[in-house]
Length: 327
Image (cartoon, rainbow, N blue to C red):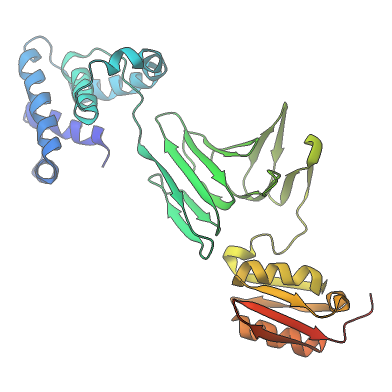
């Protein structure tokens, strides 16, 4: 439960309106950490010193909480002055909210982080799924990293590498910063990929996405693709690549596809590398589909179809040999 929910329980307890079930929740929270008990004592002290002045109902408190959102922006400006008097951020923030309960006045609060700012980095031999507190999902590709932060008005991610976002729809926008591109959404699913040269690709799986690049704003719908180019160029096209999300679906679809285009996908998906005996081998074509297949089965199928041979080498390398194909 968010901290403000426990403050509501404290309010009910102090007014004698708490239910047995809610009281058990409150008692469990108080015993979970010393700072929770400390927050309760400060709120209780404020309550006892002010409750003779004005009776505040829970409905009134909820109304005041809605007003807090408009006060947040002003509080950012005053944050440096407020920090001078901070003693303990968590206890202080809860006590300030308690002041709203017992006095009925809307005061400026420092920006409250729903989630702490975390940098999540994963090594280049694994993918990772993250579930955020708002139930949004992020599938992070190998050799990628994100920084995620959340406030009362914005959910924000900074991305290096590649990730698939399945964003939970709510009133707060969800923003992804990737190199020099900003992606704004409310609720949708999409993939963002940042290349080593800072070029960016965006694939929309569902919903709508708004992309800000330089001085341009572009809207993308399901099935559309956005990519930046060198010298500041950009393209908005339909996505014709069936394997754009193969790194997490582990599904590969090929239709008369040259081996030159197949091997890079296998290298990324299975974390291997290929060495070529003859460049003509890259001209060979294949039609077929693999769904979460083992590498051994994929290579065996390609070998039979193209009359080529894959020989395992030291260090995840495979030597590719054969007569090759005419372009």
